[in-house]
Length: 235
Image (cartoon, rainbow, N blue to C red; front, side, top):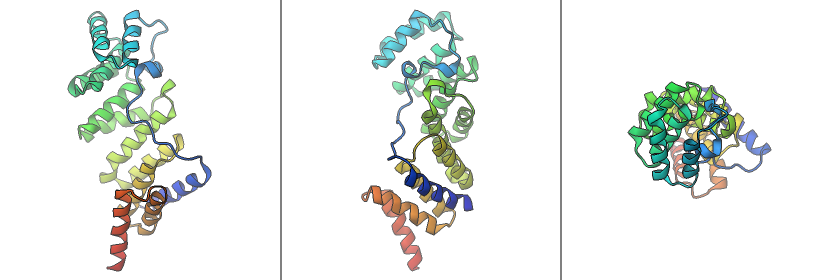
């Protein structure tokens, strides 16, 4: 449990020495932006896949879907195309189709960072945490390639949110791993505060809540968390 207090201290030291924090990106990077390098893509990329990824870059999901469906009918084990098709289905909120395609992409290439990460994030959004965790854990062990360390940090942050309820110490470690790869975000500080409070380390929790409020005085969860701590102290 002392790890939660260590996490809060680490965040304080990082904040004092680092540049202003930036939020990690919300949506996964598109295949066109990452080039799927960690998916061990061949040096030759079929023209249909290139055309599909161009359509993805322009958010033209229907065109991308049509080109990928045609290509995959003849090449059903192409990991890159399978991931692209999963990404298109995910973007259209066809979550069951997306999950199935991501799983096929992983079967075609078990070292696909993007497929493991995207499947894990999708399952987490569906609250299928027991299924999401192994995929996210796998992503943390793989080379993100051109996707970069910040996207790998996203896998660690997602793990921290999953582990929070069942293992606060593991969640603290997950968050520390994320901070080795990317700058601290306000969400990191808030999670550290909640983990410290959960572990009964109220001084560390108060420190973290106050750091959140210094940057955002209107943060509802930080205000609520700090108020709860102060009420406990009066009792």
